[in-house]
Length: 89
Image (tube, rainbow, N blue to C red; front, side, top):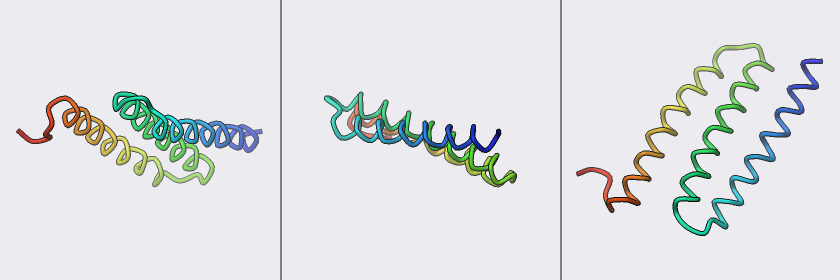
């Protein structure tokens, strides 16, 4: 039963990633693109966690933590660039 649930969850997050990619390409302004990139990071984190559950190892949970940290920093940096025109003052 857990295999079927994992397969369904992988499919749902794959569709979500495709929809995020569509929003990045077709986003009317940069705020939509920033939001789509942040959502894409969250979906990738979820995929790493699901893959770690499927494989039964903790390495992918640590990878998810690293992706979360990098994703947060990149979202903040991109927002600062859009708002102020530079990242480092």
